Image 1 (cartoon, rainbow, N blue to C red):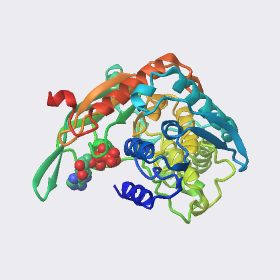
Image 2: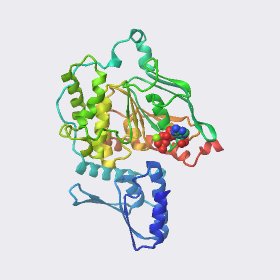
Image 3: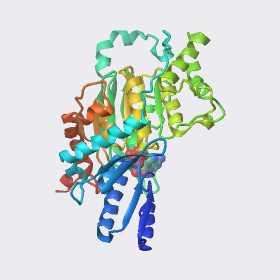
Image 4: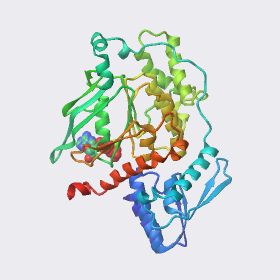
Length: 411
Ligand SMILES: Nc1ncnc2c1ncn2[C@@H]1O[C@H](COP(=O)(O)OP(=O)(O)OP(=O)(O)O)[C@@H](O)[C@H]1O
Ligand SMILES: [Mg+2]
C-alpha cells in the first residue's frame, strides 16, 4: 500500500517524465503483479513518458513499449520492441506466442551476458555419516514403507491464539512426500505457508494432526531438518567457512576434523564460493550470503530441506543463477519443500507444485505434478511446450484466489 501511495504521489505532481527505479522490487511477486497492472492503467489514462528500471522480465513485458538491456559493464545492450496488445493481462499473455518468444529472447539475452556456468572445484565429498543417519533397527525393517511415505503431513492444523480468540490458520493439511522429492508450496501472502514450513522444521508447535519424517514424529528443532530463510542469518564476524562449520561439527560424530572440513569446503565450492570462503560474512553480498545459507543447509546432510522464499530478496538474475545452483546441489539427495511466490521458480524446481487456498482455514487447493525432464535449465524450460501449460495452471489458481476466497467457493 505504501508503494501505491508513492506512485500516486509521483503522478499527482503531473510530471513530464516519470522515472521509476525498481518501484516494485520490495513487494512480493503477486502484489508486484497487481501494482504493475495498476501502473499500466494509470499510464494508459495519463500518457506520461516513463522510464522504468527493473530486473523483472515479466514486469518489463507487461508495461513497456521498448525494453533496453544494460550489460554488466554498463554499456547498452540489446533492444527489444514490445508489440503486444494492451491492456496486457498476464493470464492471457501466457497463451500468446509473441509473448513467449519475446520472453524467451529477453531472458536468454540477459542470461548470456550475466551468467557464466558457476560450479567450481573438484573436491570430493568424504564418506561420512551424519548422526541422524546412523542406522536405527526399526528403520531397516520398515525401509520400503518409509521411502514412499518419507514425509507425511496428516490432518495438520495450526491454531494461533489472538486477542479475538483462537484463529485456525491452517486446517486439515494432508500431504505425503517420497524420499528425494522436491515440492514447491505456493499461495497468497498470509495464507500459512511459513506456518506449515516452521511446523515441519519443529520450530512451531503443531496444534492438531501430525508430521512424520522417516517414520518418526517431528518434535523440536533438529539438524536432520535444515531451514533456509529469506534472509540468511550468518554470524557477520565469522567467515563463510566458519559459518558453515558451526553446524557440521555437531552433526558428524564419527568424522575426523579433516573430513568435516572437507564437507564444509565441498559444499561451499558447489555453491560457487570457492574463492570467497575465507571472507567474513559481513563482506559478502546478499546473493553470496544466501549461497552460504544453502551450503550450510546441505552440509548438515539433512533428511529434509525446508526453504522459505530463499531467493525472495535477490534480483532476478541472481535468483535464476541460485535456482540452478540449488537444483544442481539438490540432485535428489534430499527431500525438499520450497515456499515461493514466484510461479516460474515453483515450476522450475519442483516435482509437484502444491497450491494453498487463502486463510484463515487455509488448506491445499490443488496439486500440479510437473513432469518436465531433469536436469532442468531455465532456458530449456522456456522452449518446452508443457511448461506454458503448467504456468497457466498455477497462474489460474492464484488468480482464482486473488480477492479473498475462491470465486468458485462463493458461487
Ligand atoms: N505467532 C502468530 N500469532 C498469531 N497469528 C500468526 C502468528 N504467526 C502467523 N500468524 C498469522 O497466520 C497467518 C499465516 O501466516 P504465515 O506467515 O504462515 O503466512 P505466509 O503464507 O507465509 O505469508 P507470506 O507469503 O506473506 O510469507 C497470517 O494471517 C498471520 O497473521
Ligand atoms: Mg511466509
